[in-house]
Image 1 (spheres, rainbow, N blue to C red):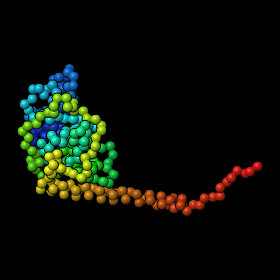
Image 2: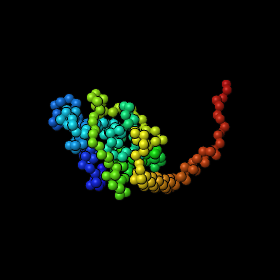
Image 3: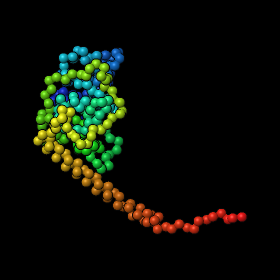
Image 4: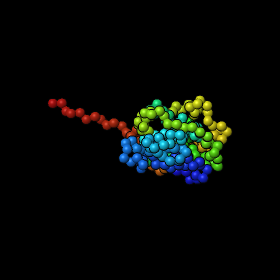
Length: 245
């Protein structure tokens, strides 16, 4: 979670901290009462039954993928600059993660990684989630307001489009583009500065990981090389055959 959230708009802080897909207290006896919708005007998570009361508000559909909250990239780009955030294609929709996901093991230091949490990414992306990008902006002294967009209208998909549950089948976005869905880059001067800083941090992390890996391997390399040399120099003995009677 973000260390310094004083610059975040109230709705953005709320959507990043809300616990979605829990049962709605108001409609706890109703079917399909999971809180999978976020109301930007009320800054709270609601269920499908609650959305009737909030029909005139800006509503954001929250979806679930690999047990974590995601939103459609098209919706996310109406709210903030999503350049260099890794996106996925699932159920014919591009989605991005709201928050970074916990890792069971650290990155090996090879390939492209998230500049905030070191999660492996596809080139040329720098962030695994919207939260990771926001953390990088705050850490480099940037102003969050420059990356937030004024969205006056945000409606839910048509009824029956989906219930927020995503199938495990997903595809990483192609590595040749970081353009938005509108076809234009959402970077700009501030985004280039952010990218340069993030790329520098990634290079430093990779070098640190590689140097640490090399020093850790050197003490054990001697015996391994000796064994390999012995195996290569060892000659096969004379084959033993059964006697003929």
